[in-house]
Length: 93
Image (cartoon, rainbow, N blue to C red):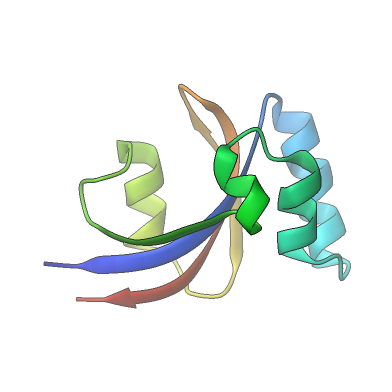
């Protein structure tokens, strides 16, 4: 079964998500931004979600984590929880 590790930042608005993504693309540290802004408890660990199997996360999240490029910040991704920036740190098939 496919597994992946990822970290994310969860915020309420698409605009805030886009602004944070821009900061990261301009050199800000993903983990530090997660600690300061993420609404998810994982923010305290720099957004680290650890390793998880396909199907464990909501569909929109899973689709990105198991199909998109590693090491790149993806988003904004809208879910029922809000807007996410997602960085896939590893994946196995």
